[in-house]
Image (cartoon, rainbow, N blue to C red; front, side):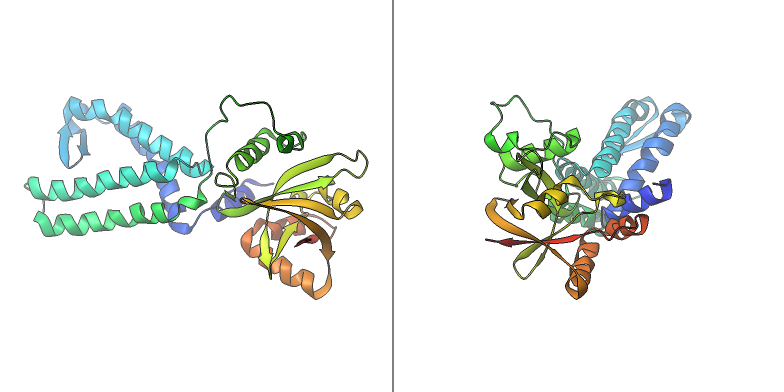
Length: 292
């Protein structure tokens, strides 16, 4: 996958305004703050905290904290961590207060009206982050836990660590942590191995259509179908968890007009599916999960 493709996929993970905040944090982390800390003369240093101006060495002393804040922001937006939305909202609130206070106490300020206007502008991302909190994932590492539950024992061992951690959090919280992953809904699918006869669980992005759940056997555009798809073709009876809702279902591969309709739905949910199809000669299966 090319760098341009990776950047395009990364861009699609967030709304445009959140991408703006993300790249602003990257700029401050890798360009502006290093220059400010290591190259700007002390006499020219100027920092503002809660509306109060700091200059000289006092400003220089607070720059590492400012740098760390932007670095945390860049990482939090990049990985879409769950702590990001309250952390960024609190920082935005600090900026709102700073705008009001600075305009009130600084001789160059515009007074209460200018302060309120400036504060209102910075309040917009604060509110937007709060409203978008469901887009963020958990960044917490699972702490010491009791022995694996029966459900955890069915988790596919071939999946990467992050996917297994995602499933553990999903199971432990009934989907409160994990149902929304990078801004899209996910479910847990348990199939029966076509050769081993053992149950295997994995997380998948899903869409909905008239009470049915739609999943895509993309495998990122690889030439062959994913193993879980071969399993459900051999044994269509599966188990599904959507947030806290657990149920038995029957998996059906669709084709023709219905496939196109459901493919279009899923391409809106996760646009990279379009590129995955372009990368492979096989027709990527569209699967419908219907409650039994």
